[in-house]
Amino acid sequence: MERASGFLLDVYDGAQQCSPSEFNEYALDELKKLINFDSAGVASFAITPEKKVAIQSLHLRSADAERFRDRSKTVGVETLDRNGTLASRDSVAANAFAQRGKSVIVDIEKQFSSPDSLRYCRKYETAHSLAFISNPTTNGTIGGMALWRASRKNPYSEEHGQVATLVLPHLFQAMAINRRLATASAVGANGTT
Image (tube, rainbow, N blue to C red; front, top):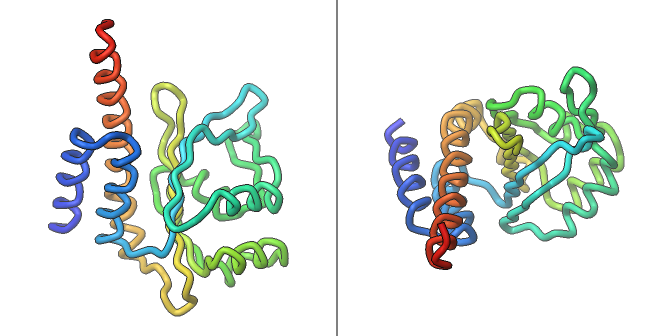
């Protein structure tokens, strides 16, 4: 718990000191001290009027944009149904979306049966995933994060999930604070109010 408290203080401090691009890297560096991962993706989503999930921003660590282009080909279009449930061929995303505010841990080999999905995960060295989807903000934006581990011998534990569930809502809040401060600073520098 003490490590999580230190993380939170550092992240909120960093949100006030860093530019948005610097903060994403800083926050992932700090998070990696709590929950080790090999690669990660942090995204901001919106829901279109047609109920499609649209990525507004994406920050990758030790992963490239090709991973998300391939994901789109593998998974296809993701939409919300009438009940607000994510309709997706990606069961990790659907499960995380259904449990917003709670971390979801997945052993890929055990969870996925689709040959295309398994091929995709092997290509991008994903044996284990820890996924988190935030609750929607007042402007309708939804934050999401996935932490990936490459080795089958290095699964996430229940404790990792508990720590992530505790700290990731704060991380998304710190990201929002960081963006607001950057916007306010830019407006102030332009001499407009």
